[in-house]
Image 1 (cartoon, rainbow, N blue to C red):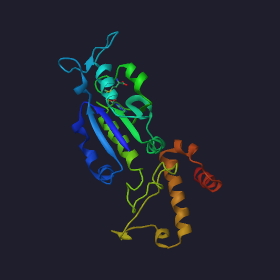
Image 2 (cartoon, rainbow, N blue to C red):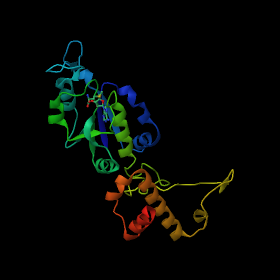
Image 3 (cartoon, rainbow, N blue to C red):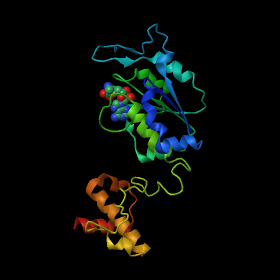
Image 4 (cartoon, rainbow, N blue to C red):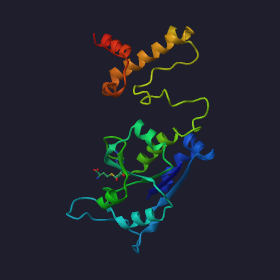
Length: 238
Ligand code: SAM
């Protein structure tokens, strides 16, 4: 996968040199380029922002530097993602969709955001990471890149898997325990020590349902529940 990031702050992306995204780059699954669109400004002071027509507080990113930076990228059919609080919510499903693509381009906003023509002409996706407002799109782009890249083949390594992760199954993940079995009198649930795989699977599924029911009941509607799941949830409601 190739990712190009249009940003005024390329140095903010240092975290992506580490951990899983760093590994994806090392094993050759990922190429990332940071493009400072200020370098493309034809203004003699390299300005990239201007006052909004119609008045109001704040400055907007102007089209010229961003269109020129975009035109300079070698591309065939990229996904062009505008980071914006007005976009559709970023979810695991979106990350799964993007992980199948060859080329993603992220546009990181600043100030009051982008001139609308940038949205209208360049974006294939307008995406938000949550119902809050960040100062710029850099943190949002990093969150989305991390969540997407860890789904690429071989990136997590043989020991880890994303298939049982929260949201991948449609539910929140069940609780995990590791050694020791008794830590300061706090015991690991007996079923996990039983060696009975069928019972362990049932316990995990029920714990996932219980957690989702308590913390994110909105997820249950789309979770593809079995009859057994539904009966278990009914018993909780009773
Ligand atoms: N005036 C905009 C609004 O109210 O919708 C907010 C602009 S915000 C201060 C500046 C930039 O931060 C945005 O252009 C966008 O790139 C990024 N940003 C802020 N919050 C975000 C969020 N929740 N998700 C994705 N990007 C966000």
